[in-house]
Image 1 (cartoon, helix red, strand yellow):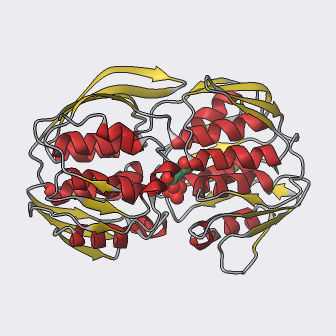
Image 2 (cartoon, rainbow, N blue to C red; image 1 turned 90 degrees about the vertical axis):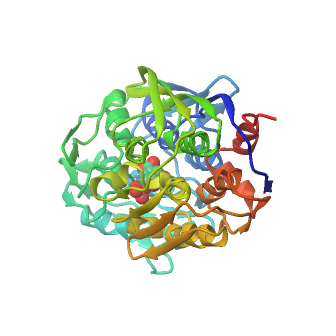
Length: 426
Ligand code: S3P
């Protein structure tokens, strides 16, 4: 895919459904009694992997143009899949479904693509074992494939060393099958979609500060869910609107849950011109439209408790930093190394290839912004967020930038290139 620079972006864009919320709507719908109807479901490859896994577990799921209909069978309604479950590229599917599978009266094997087979699963294996789960990494390297056998679970209180919504959600889901309460305390609050949505389905789940707890054996009931737009997808349009000169974009239907809105806070610190409007609540989640105008950005420091609230947006924030005046320091973000690619390396190497002054650190990067960027060949390492972030970088660079394996954008945003091109002023 070659991306040419843009002289101006204008118009409005409706952001596709949130990936985290879409995954959860399928999983919780499958474990609820009765039908769950989901509108604005994200039809990205990751969420389709979740659908496929639950279909193999015996759940009827209709994917129609209007909505997704999940015919839930209750907490104990899943059936042995008869083959291994393939989560594709999806870490969320792998980690959340493991919590559910740990509580089933049958054995499963779970695998995924080359990237998934390198991502750390020790972070769920250790606490699940503490709960009594029989789970092991097939190659004993703490990665998938995972073999999960039936066993009796007990509630624990777990102090997680990482702020990870996938770890938290995995344990809360396993906790539904345990004897006694299960709770988890994180170093910093991670996204709380599981807590909000499971409560709406009828679970007895509580959260206070950085601790969430769940009581076992809830009676979950099918829901109607309208999925808010994904701020992680909106992030590319926010950055593009800010960076491309003479631009004005109305970015509609953006989920602004406070555990996810860190990019807006970082952009504000960089002196971005972003006006939220039409704030409302959709399916228990805050949503707004964002009016974004071209801005002269300044560098900033991003770290601490802000990191989990913008972890997936750091690739495109790094692109903003490369075009900003002054220095941006990103720290406390070692989690970037264990995403779909080692994002510290993929960001810094690709920014450097485009002529930026960027240096990797142990837990982030330092970017001295303001140097003009030029076209380069972008190595995405099949990481969707790297492909889309560097497509944005290309809009303001000199020459035509080549994005290798650009199709990986379909993991979270199948229509990304069409949507961004639709905003070009010609
Ligand atoms: C997600 C949690 C985050 C995020 C991922 C989606 C989720 O991962 O990066 O894209 O839906 O729970 P971690 O839990 O590993 O931080």
